[in-house]
Image 1 (cartoon, rainbow, N blue to C red):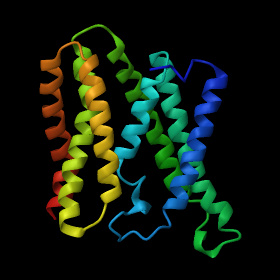
Image 2: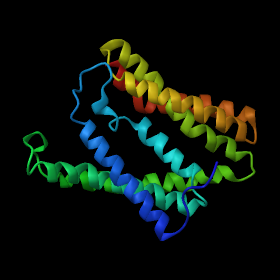
Image 3: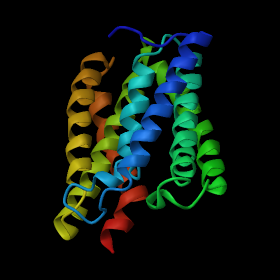
Image 4: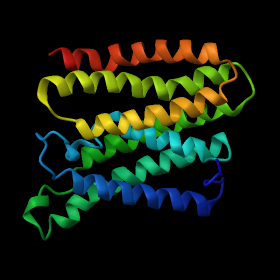
Length: 210
């Protein structure tokens, strides 16, 4: 896979602007009806979307520093445009009223830091060691956990179908790619199963059991 991101100012500006663009898309999608089968308004509210996009950032980076900074700038840019667009459009369109939600922006801006740290660590899956099998399994296991949770939620409330399809596509593509790259296929599969269960019971089991 060609490396799209580099440790340079130009590259960081590029990924920041991409984050701005994605944030605007998510903000506009947020005004779709929430209680439908497809639930387009909830694209950014589930973690699978951010796992998929940040995994792509790591894959397209040339170093762990590049991956960490790029992930941070992407998430920060997204948060800035997500809440900034509402404030700007709210001046002209009543649908977007509510102003700039500073507290939420600060919260997600702060959360951009651990996202960057996670990307910094995940980049080490490029090392030719057995440990890379564990790192490769983590994003795939996370997507599998969310798929389980969404499937249960979908069966109960008939919503989040788009998120289920998106996560499933990500699971298949990353799952196959990372299986091929993993140093140890056995450790990769074991780590995938364990991480899927851990992520599911920590993040989704309680929510879908209500």
